[in-house]
Length: 194
Image 1 (tube, rainbow, N blue to C red):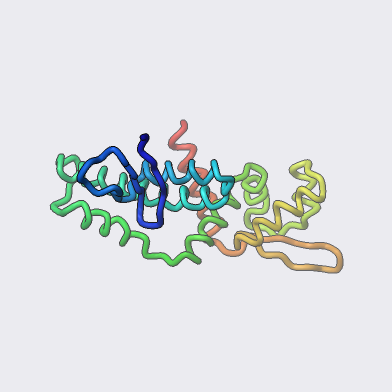
Image 2: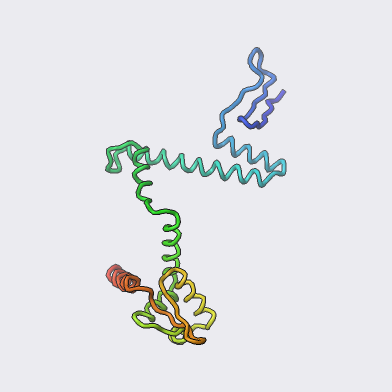
């Protein structure tokens, strides 16, 4: 008679009727391959969403474990300069993330706004002046919707501020530190690539 495999909430059950004088059921601890097997079984039963959820949760745990093992290997081989254990090294690295999640999201928005050629050109054109959106549109040869879209992204990121005069909207760089950042970044890129 073949061995029957079944999945339970506590692990994998192996039912082997051919085992004489030994327990009929043997529980195996949950391991990454076991979760893959459970997911395949759930897919076979048509419960694909539960399978995807279970698999993704344990894939994240497995990835974190692999990363910890790699850091431990680096420390043990002496390839990094630290007189600490792998766990202490990971704690040191995590302590560098002193900013809260909100600040990190704001940084992401800030750098995403700078990550577009059109928006960088707009910041360079505006420079020290306060320009109407139609001036920016004409200088770059853009359509009105495209110009408004990019200016709105820059404004949401806090790089530009706007003021209205009737139906005209004027934009200026929010403060001198943004302008200095753009100029410094430009000069740094020129140094690196020339």
